[in-house]
Length: 420
Image 1 (tube, rainbow, N blue to C red):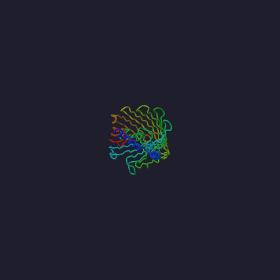
Image 2: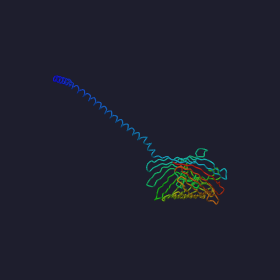
Image 3: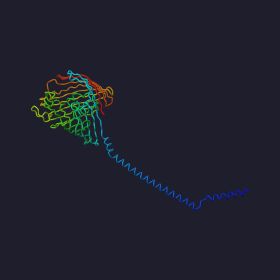
Image 4: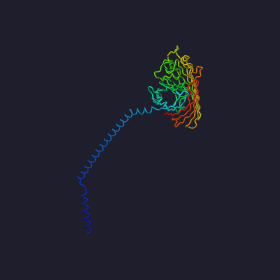
């Protein structure tokens, strides 16, 4: 019985195995089907590779287009921004001053100056700088203010440690004419000696060379437009005589008369830490610029200026002397105007990093050539408080002691100044 059952099982298994094995025709059909699928997959792969290649080409073209755009206006704008600088400074003042002459008293607010700087570096050796200023907030006919271009020049480093500038620039003289941002000096108002004798702020148009001649020694030398002190009484209808003060002669490079040029040279020493010593000379053969007056054909003028500034820790001191020697012909306009001079001394002390105090004595005379008592004296005492190294609050008290019946002001000034 057992043998019969085993024989039957083996037979059934053999029959099943015979039925599961494909025939040759089925095997050939299966191989053809698989080959078709492989061919289809290869076609799809080639199509995918072609699309990927086309995408890469388009991507490269896109990057090339982006690079072309970047190398165009966008790149030029970025380069311009990197080489162009913008800055400026400003001062708001409050003056509360009384005078024996009630018409001369002051109780007023004034946005004295608002200035914008623009500069551009063309390359390592060539640059441009300009300074646009609005004085007294509103300019125009019948207004108190002016719009002025104080500087607009190109400077070229033609060799190591030597350069030349051409255009409109500040004259290298005194302590504040070239450096007058409000946080750099004490007092709400600029000192009267540099204002009335030098006269700051003073700019001209022309050519100026500067450089270093030895360690600690530098020079400036140039030729430029000059002063025009018009002797004609009709040029100043508010008085019975013509102009005679040095400050009257600033032409500000506004259709400036160029009949007679001026020549300026300065030597400066800064070889010791905290010390600056300088001397400036200027000569002009005719401050009347070809105009004759009272039989006189010309009036030459020569200025000498010396100053010293020293800072040692919290202590500082500034001192300056300036003198003009003008042809005697100018005395036909104003007696004693052939000599105009002044000096001041200003000690200061930095109590803290933010707070500093100062005192200043100033004396000047625009008619020093006469025997009359015409000199003016001014005492100032006050403090600066720096909210930031470039933002300062100022307060001072002023007292005048003038000879010859001139107005004497007494009172206080408040101010805020900034630069960036």
